[in-house]
Length: 222
Image 1 (cartoon, rainbow, N blue to C red):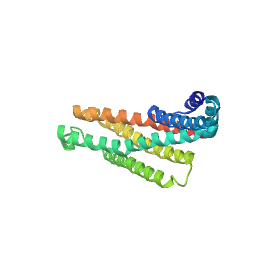
Image 2: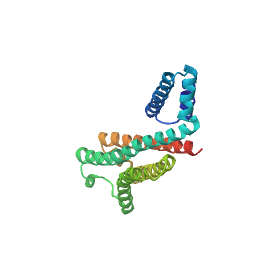
Image 3: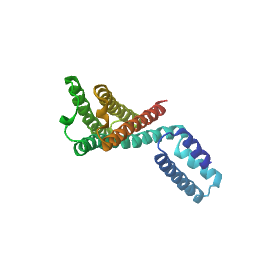
Image 4: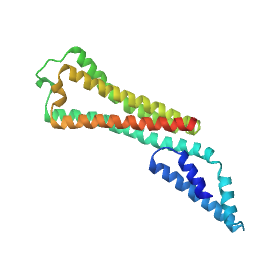
């Protein structure tokens, strides 16, 4: 009975495997403890497990609460990647450019005024991302006593999508504009190229995590 219930719960949950396994293990321990208590009271094994499952609640209801928790755990992890990872990539690239290439005055082609505006906007947007992430983390803490799990998951998912979108737009805009002005600027040095590739991969990874977070929210409200 307990194993069947946990299997049903497992099929209803979507999210990070480690977090999901922890929640299922928590449920398993609670169910077995309850069943043991019923056995100690004289109930048969089958009846003890049946009553433990009934006390725990319908799988659909429990899964909704667990899914909200999964979404929050995954969302918070993604937010920390946004807060730390995105500005770190920008700072690392700037230092790599200074150490391995030098000042922008060494460029062989002139820099259009519109390109300066684009780069300033893109670099500024990069540091907007961690601000959104910090606000989201603070908001989650503040709203945790005011919203239910689904509401918190939605709040988290919206801000993650916003931050990831800003980061992806800034990276795409910067690379596109640079390639249009002078493709060689994308290849200032080997460290710069490697960091640029890493930044793009990080941005794509964040898109995947944001989709998972939003997918988890969609599962909650479905």
